[in-house]
Length: 148
Image (cartoon, rainbow, N blue to C red):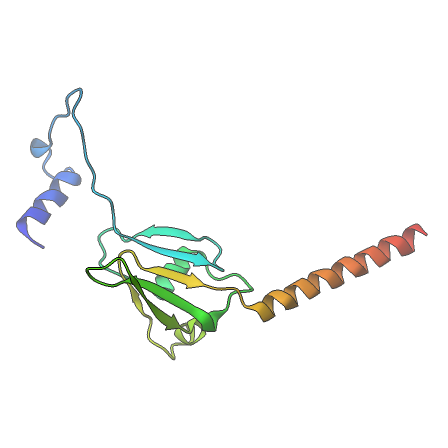
């Protein structure tokens, strides 16, 4: 860390209170926007997550912050959308989250403005819908059997 970083940290932690600046009426305090990575799709908590002082965040760390995958997530079809430097375009990076969780693929780093997309598995969604329909049908049969 540089001297400036040390000084900023000391002021922010009140280690040197004599260097604190007295805020006056009508003063404006500007705080720069933090770097963010995004996750969307079949995760329990989608959204943007601030990197804070970090330069990157791993896939597993981001998914932990997003409270994990939903039961209908397609682990094999996830992808990262990453900005191409000096452009507004994004490149797509395919991922197999199952292999990453198992340690059989690298835990890829996510950088500011990266978007992790976890799509729905059609087969899992259909299976869950069939389970819900079966439970509803059995419940209805029990209710009708008791009532009539």
